[in-house]
Length: 186
Picture: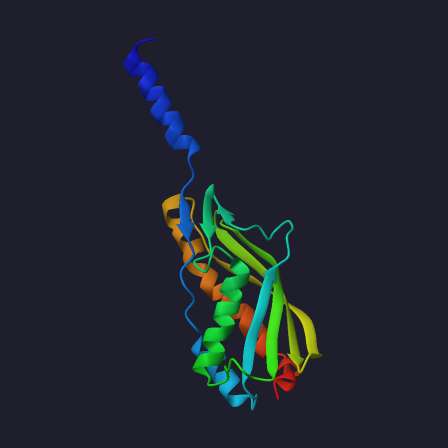
């Protein structure tokens, strides 16, 4: 074989074997979530440690059609969730580092499927609220989200990437919709 053919084969193989690496968009608070917190009558709270429970459907990076999506917060999706909670508590005037109430948790499921036609994402996290070391709330919240996708990867992959913060907003909305959670913050 000639050098040109070998070089062409090597370039094609390299292009096909390398996946693209992306970073999820930074979190933008949901105004509805912030308003829900403002109207809740909750006291101030701090945000403690959020961990990531290893397992299927909760990888360090999310695979989207061969591309990997990682968190902009120290590469940790648990940190992404903690940062989202901090931002929404802060915007609602409910965040205080020295508060007696602390919210912590564990991200248990975090996955996106950018299928052709309809893409979906699943997220699940355990949230724990403590006051003075005493557990006042300990529950798991989960969401399933769907959106239009495309056969074309150059359309489907960015849509999935942009949908990640929306999934987090929906998970936090499910948390704030729980009267027991809001009561634990009082």
